[in-house]
Image (cartoon, rainbow, N blue to C red; front, side, top):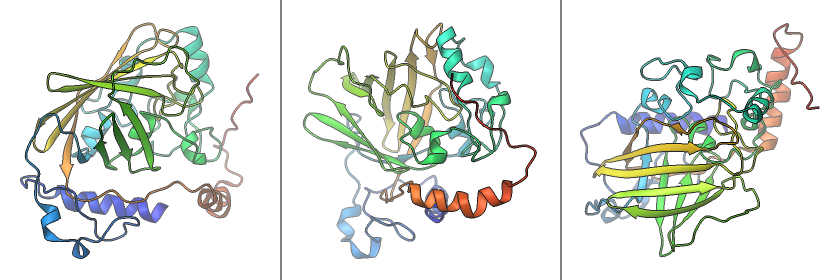
Length: 305
């Protein structure tokens, strides 16, 4: 899995090296891309661009830079944010329930080499309870943020839009058939999502998330009753914009409104990048645990009362 992560970074870097190019339609990926067709094996006509339609979100998208990727709802402090704003100032005040949840979440270093914003909750890899360290389902939008510069795609159909995130092979269903959000859903890792067009903006509302899933990689909480609103806008052929708002009175004293996020169209296809528990266990047992043996900076995760 770790070699595939490296391959994805090189693939994205090569693509972004030509920002002035109008990308063709997705058709293949070359080099270190299991599950994707090599470009040379596909007909050239598959690379022809589709006509621009602001209501068409299909295709592969990714953040244009690490700076942009850091500037998400909830992600200002982990990487400092574009404007360097402190994480704890950006996040709304927590309720008592929210604070209790946050205090029980101990992030590891996965995707967070800088522990800024995590205070004394940060743990060395293996002494955390970070779902990413165990290949547990991350839920949405945590899976989005954990992906760093990994790509994602939208696949429209008659009654729903499917969203596929390459990292951890995450699939979401966004229903567009007019149904309302469920009133008392069984909590699900990716929640329950509905979407509709408001002019040229695709508005998605989601609820019913599993409370064991973290809202983001910093360990911020969210309740199953919370409602996440995404506003997707295709500004031009190569640019997709997103703004998120989390309204969760059980966890926060006011809505959490994120900054606008920019994505650029990519010309490569997504490929298989699955977090395999047995591979993670092998790495931990043979490398991480050996390196940390006897370390004075490891701190065990407290047991829940």
